[in-house]
Image (cartoon, rainbow, N blue to C red; front, side, top):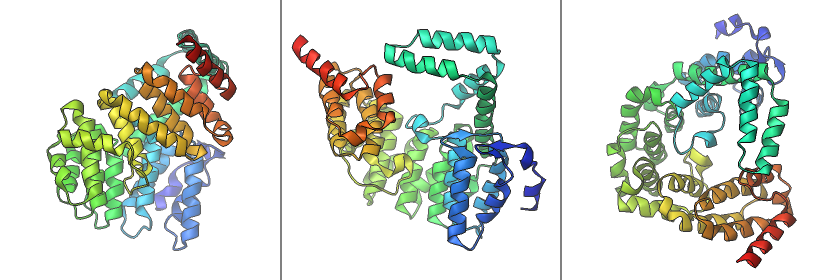
Length: 388
């Protein structure tokens, strides 16, 4: 790691200013002291990946992190691989379950970089004017007022540069690593790089078909649906002895083929809408019900009633911090099913004070044209009943 000091970290910025602390944090990932390693990893999540934002320093850290992940002597290599995924993607929610639309991302980034300030201002004005409702228009107007053309271009460039830095250093060889935790994390990481499908696809297919670790096999199966890759290696998973592998195979097949997936796969995805408890699958933080809701929303539109019922039940039992993403999935489900909308909004109105204290919930409601105040929402529901 001697060349770590050849990078001009003092000239690079991260979330807290000059990135002079980054080389020490990267070196600390090799420490024999677990607390020191965890502290360094937490610091890197906060400074070169701050709330999903990547910075000019971020892509420069990637080659060193990839090198550590590839070295069997490095502790916690799977955690470093997950950090690399974050540096490439931001948060996976924006890419799940479709996978990374890299062609669209590159096109949009080229637009950001090529637009003058005057063109960007005009683009934002149109965006505000095209808002679907007053609440969204207010949110967009705030973005318009706080927009900084120079910073927008810097952050946009850093995001794509970070993704490309991970792609350039993508550790596909770790799909054959002796540690199943590393293989699983590597399968998760490479699934976000469709431009590398020709190399990654066969390696993932081999894991899906034959890996002795069920978590690795399950991860590889769903990973194949994100590249995407032909489903041949996935189909046998429906008959696997391990339940997580069967579930991942079903989710992957529906994600690839929708209504044309085998009936057992479609039935399994509907069943998973009511799954409870965490799993070791890295996607959606191991929550199969969330993953099933998003896959079925994309690929099984006819299952909207079952999906809405499951999401309403989950919302009623959710912790406050989990309520707003579930509410978002629920409102997306009922967008095209107005007969389900009243029940969905009632479930949201019935959330407790702790859930309603989160601004994230209010943002979700505004984005869907729903009153973002609980009393106003209840009045809206009463008006609906009177009108019907």
